[in-house]
Image (cartoon, rainbow, N blue to C red; front, top):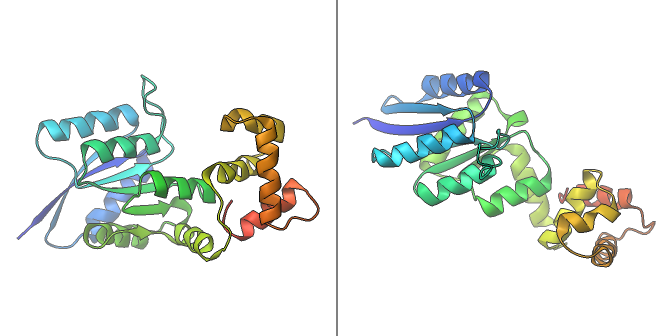
Length: 224
């Protein structure tokens, strides 16, 4: 008996989408029938998701690229927002996130907010890994690519626990944001930022007080 699988692929690079399609069609199981729709931006993706519900043919799997052009009304800024929307209106759909981002903060945040059934870093991706991820997500999720697993493993094995604001401080510092500008990003006072940075330097045993040393130690433990 054939298994019909409805898929929405969301990516703004047509060649990448074509590669995904070809890989899945070539490696699918003999009893699987794949029905694939393609969206190149947030507006198209929302249109397809809404239509699938109107037709009572909801998607089974969504491939979502994180870096996408924002929707025209500004309500969706990225694939993260789209994935959150999909979680609400298509609760049974399995979400596979694909991204070039490989910083620990982004990975941690996506897992926390979206909890995807599949999480693939594009620089890790091969045809065979995409095929494996697809079948694993259908039958035994989650499936995380090597870089994602490595970040998770590092953050689990470290005995250092830091909250979201401190994670964000490390992330922003790693992006080159100056301390005096951190307060605006975090919605806290500059003195609160300084206090948190001191806590972080104490936690990571930074003796020279330098931000770069703090980032180096945080990278070793998978926080950046």
